[in-house]
Length: 196
Image 1 (cartoon, rainbow, N blue to C red):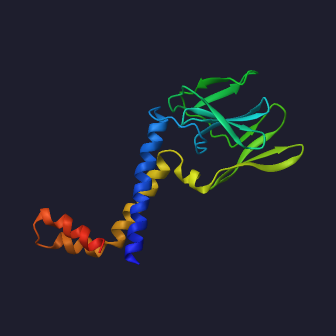
Image 2 (image 1 turned 90 degrees about the vertical axis):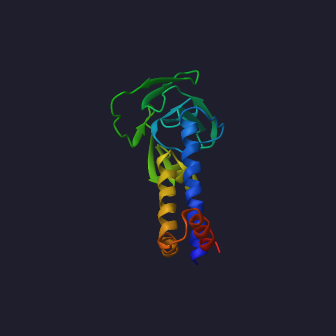
Image 3 (image 1 turned 60 degrees about the horizontal axis):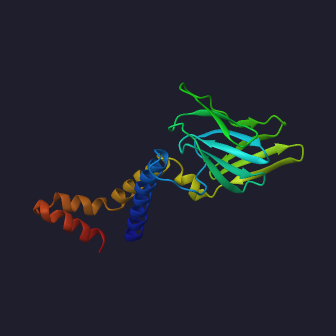
């Protein structure tokens, strides 16, 4: 059982490290990704030209969905991970205004036609639409994407992995570190005892 928990904790650590680094590369423009990214740091939701536009501050983009919530593409913004407001013109191009002071947290996004979009669930992230036809879940991202979102979530998962690893192997770690074995051999001894 200890071995299983050790491997699970190592998986969480690797997930956290890779997720943090990958998301930071996406945020700073060092990495480009054409597909749908997790909906995090939502800057606004606008329905225009029979499409749904969702601004993502952390990822410097506006993701475009059809009215059924299917991902279509994205539009790159130059907000440099800062908060922003945006509108979409008649050609489907965003007009982005950076916000340099703290942005007000908005949970409901009401459109000019009276349609309302709101985040109905955070884990996994679900966005609902309310209009004259009623209410429906329009975008529901998988749990994995919600956990992967931004830099903080993977970092927290990695820290949980470290905590779980140390807690699971605390007896072995204290035995090896308390031993009079030379320092250059302790690491090899520690690895061999943990993974045998």
